[in-house]
Amino acid sequence: MSVGVKARFTLTVRNDENAPRYSIPVRVYYVYTSPDGVWHSVIKVKEAEVDFDPLGEYQDWFDFTFANPGTYKFYLVVNGQEEDEKVIRVNSQGSISAVMTCNPEFVTEDVNSVSCRVDVDNLGETTEDIWITNIYFAGGEIYDKSSADNLVTPSPSSLTLNSYSTGVFTFTIPINDELQKRVPVDLSDINPGTPIAVKTYLNTLQEPIMFVVQMNPRNLGGDIHISSKDVISVAVGVGKAVWSAVKENPKSVMTVVSSIGEFAYTAGISWIIQTWVELYWRGLMEPVPPDNSGDNNLIVGDES
Image 1 (cartoon, rainbow, N blue to C red):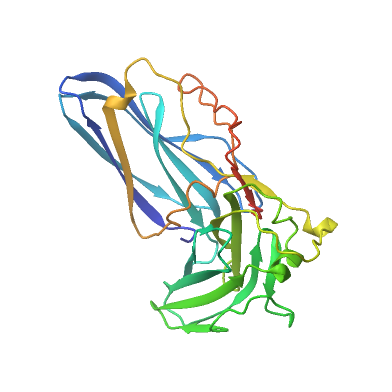
Image 2 (cartoon, rainbow, N blue to C red):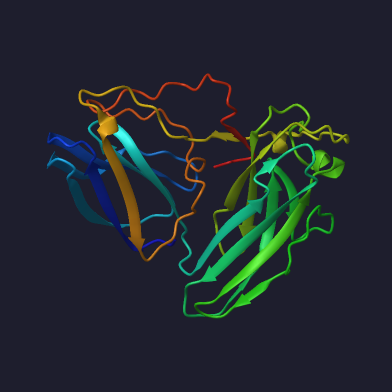
């Protein structure tokens, strides 16, 4: 989605108990991160005190205009507990939207390649020439359009999209010793299910598009090249936060937040786009506890 687009968010909160619920606070917050990775304070955009009839439902909506490029993460908080979230990435360019998916999402020991697909939409009124400039896997560059020494080759090499048309790039990442030589992490020394970022840059977008696969350790051989420029950068994925109990039973309230309008957000990866922050809303929430469960929240190769 691009700067200046207005989106409408629809909120639905239901009381699943056959009993009234009185004065339940419903709030929506967002956190904004600029393209250079600077995190900004939590901002409240919607607030209501709701009395629920037995099995009753509350619906409301609000409009939001995305004024700056970057990442916006919205939180729906009901009775002090986070119940839903949406992540929307905003590009400074106004006409091109792209989403990437990769398969398989879980790279086990018997998987020899990962196939990726980039769907591109031209939402503007002029014809656009589009190509992939760079591709990264686990922080290592595996494709550079200006280089002849590439591990992967996108197909087609470029797209010419007329106004309001779509196109697709595809490429395949081999899981072999040559891949190991290019990434700044020992793929034989990762934990099972380690999140690995696949990042693709288009000539028409300042920000990369990203998909995360999970990978088991692979002893691929080859030299592991680590230089000062290739030091791994990681971001901690935000999963569903587990908040402390509140005064009333929040499990009796089921919440849904949906967004409609002139935009699309990157579906399926909302839990990995934002750098992990210990959100702390005074009087509303307890701090998010650190994750010491060893479940590999670190996403290798995510520089955002």
